[in-house]
Image 1 (cartoon, protein in one colour):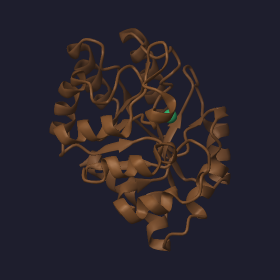
Image 2: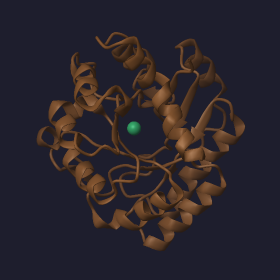
Image 3: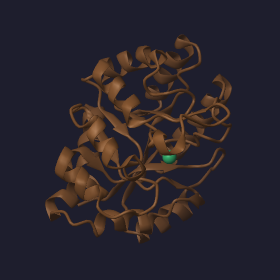
Image 4: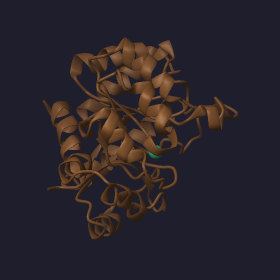
Length: 259
Ligand SMILES: [Zn+2]
């Protein structure tokens, strides 16, 4: 079974992932999803910066087509037309989803035109999320931290769009409960510290079809494949659940995107 990492970031102007491809495969990961260098220009990138980030992502997916696919990064606080045009441009370059970070909260109504388009073209959204009771709503000037409550509000408005909420472990048990009734929401396992019990709880409360492995690797720094993947490998879940989390769910989401 192919292992797919659903949450990785290249750096802006990275031209060649060959060294990373070799390292990734040594770690037992076959393919990766590139979400773009989403913080490369700070929390509120302008239209030119967004285009630069996406150009870089899709340059890399064309260079390494057997290794990576790419998401279109958007800043929903920019003009609606700018966002929708950029989404279409990225779709023509092969985008298989949309990524949003911390320019505003996931519950912000400015996301709605983008989500309506995702519903039409059947592409998923991967949105940053964290436990904001611990971190605060605005963790740095201009950095809007989405809570699982924001994800739930968005998912309720768009139940037909697949939404992957980033960072299961720092969302924790409350995060799992917040999204539980919204069956269009999955969590990726990336990020935060390797805390035991959270993946097990997500499998139990959401089902293993709603958890997808990701590392949040940021080449050549950031979170480390080995510790992030080990969280799934060592979780006390069934082998079938592990297979789903490490690859089958990603294939399903990406397959839906391709269809
Ligand atoms: Zn990330």
